[in-house]
Image 1: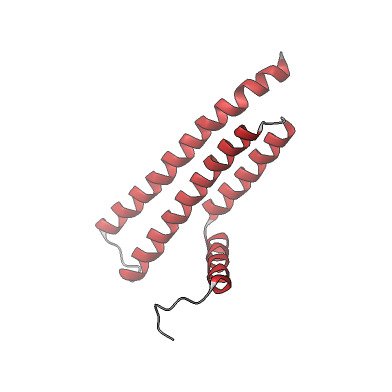
Image 2: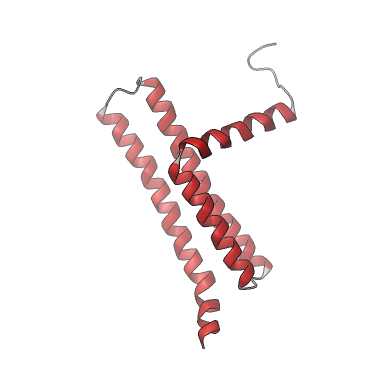
Length: 125
């Protein structure tokens, strides 16, 4: 079988799950973002979010987790290509990809503040 031949849906699904497992085992920030997303989602359930609010929340959480995974892909790829040797260009690329995660996380925090802020205020008033 050629390297480029389609291997079927379930094989692709298995590979994707294996990739997520690698990220979970090796990336502390990925684990943190998963946990934070889970806790925030539980809080949304407790605050009785509407369907559209859940949709926005899921997109925001997915945005951060996707950015974190892309960051990991960039780091693994550059480390493999440059055989873990220091390079100023590699550092700059890794810093830029970490910056993407920071922007995604900051955006998500702002979205969370808008979604949760009003509901939390109503609880205390």
